[in-house]
Image 1 (tube, one colour):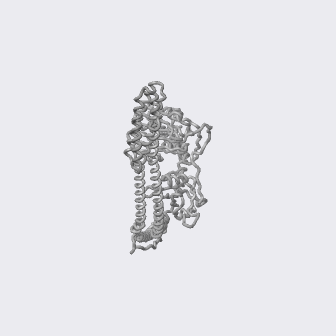
Image 2 (cartoon, rainbow, N blue to C red; image 1 turned 180 degrees about the vertical axis):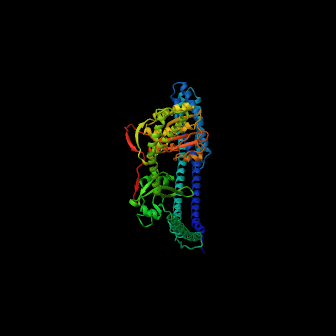
Image 3 (cartoon, rainbow, N blue to C red; image 1 turned 135 degrees about the vertical axis):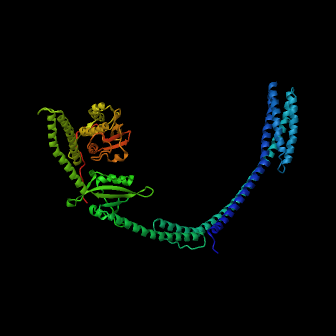
Length: 638
């Protein structure tokens, strides 16, 4: 018959419990016996010993009272001795009474009777001693008379009490020896019982280790193997007990896990092949990197252009990709901070390859997350913009060339119109003057448009250099405000400046940045009605300085705000004054050339806020240098 684990554990524990119960019961019985013995000693002997000690102390003080009386020189001393005699007789009688009621030993009763007889004689003679107050010689005889005097009776009392005291002390010593004998005997039995318990416990432990621990260790080892990915685990333990059922359930679980892995491995393989086929279909280079930056997947275009090989097991050196310097920070932000990198302008273009195989690509990094927003890696797409970049360059060159070619004849036309209006070649009639004024206005507008196109072309092509010098934000805003203040006063618009204290200086090209701020102020004045307000502010934000132009004008509809910095874009329906749609594009290019950013926040009907974020100077070192307004091209050779 096979025993269950519970039955085996009970059969192991019950004998130990019985032995422990037996040892405990014997210990309790021993403690009770020793307690009764100690209580008997206290009751039979200790009380008698204490009573005799108190009696001896009292009789000694009574004897001292007799001696004080014999040696006293006056009645005062004899009276004090008599009071001592009376007081100590009370203590003496209490001790004698306690002993009389605690006679427990053989021979103790006769000793107590003798003590009581002598005590009675001693009390009568003592009372007579103190009643005779005149004859000192008679007192001497009463005290020292032999036999029957007070001193003789005192000696007899001491002897009797001493015998009683010794009798009880001897009995206490015998009781102590008996208790030690019982303790020693019980200790021997306890040692025997403890040895038996230890032997049974050792045998039980060995039995448990043999029948229980080995199967459990086998199950533990198999579970550890599964946790390490080895699902080919089988436990060979077979029994009808609980461990046998556990082993059977474990084997069933391992079999199901193997089946599950096989079925899902096929699905994962199909999914991986589908994903690989999908990215292979892209003409642009595409990489998929894991959270550590290793390449997991790459399409043929990426392998050819970048020379990368996806990571493979048992192939060290695969999956390594060193991104270009400009992509290190964006890739780290995507993998660690889960922020996508989606540049739009050609200033972020990378040149890859060389010679006839050189390509201009715009990198885009998209984070990959699980349903719980945990980072799984990132997809890096290198969009081929070679043709678009070439077309943009052709467009920019065409605009610059056309604008430059138009500027000279337009200047001549403008000069001729001015000369005609000054009537240097002859008088004009009113109709001619009206036509010439209209021509002058349109020529001025065309010249402004041509100048804007030339400025924008120079900024885009990097041909315009910036003369960076340290300038205070307050002086920059003040100069811009002074330039437009007459126009603001004529229109009835309040112009205010608010500058925070302690701002660091800005490394800027004052003329170019002033041009950008002037464009923003012109727009604010154009779209702010009489009685409105325009505020120029400057404040610090970390290592940067924020310059803001805040108006209370008509505002910009939300759907148009993402497009306001595009070239030639004008908000539909806002046609208060004619414009080219290049002002904000020029602002964006100038601020970008300074290493800053420009943003817009607007609420229709409540106003608009343009904010320029520019890096500041920290420290007091000199600064006077010229930089190119656009970043250099970055070339990456695959």
